[in-house]
Image (tube, rainbow, N blue to C red):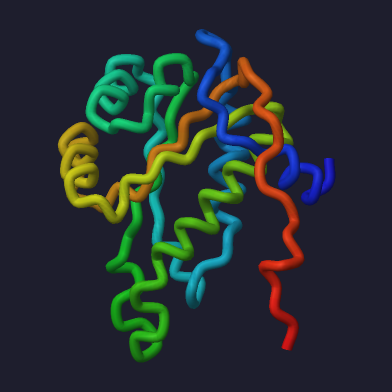
Length: 172
């Protein structure tokens, strides 16, 4: 599968095959793909929590209003942003670029999942203070929860959304 094929095929999956296995090797490949993402001055301002525990997945689902798909997902990857990794490095050059960096790492996970035959759904946490606080409590961390990525074997195949629109491009 080419990168363009993965980009075109990627969809937000909200229905997974309950009980389907995502292997440790697949999880490792997803996380490796995230860590290969570019980041400002190579600061890599992220950490990850992999949640397979059904009780924890249910806790997240009950507190985050857009994570209903965790009911059938095999697991969730929680990306933790580390803004402090970018403080005062090289005269502050990369400071506050962590949202872009974490977004790039997230997209790498989503595209790698397509190649592996898995489905994902990116559910934002940051910058919503209430969601951040709830996720910190569930995870028992003071670190910054950036998002929840539901992962599993898809049990749906949504139609393509979005298309190339020449009208949204300005050539100078």
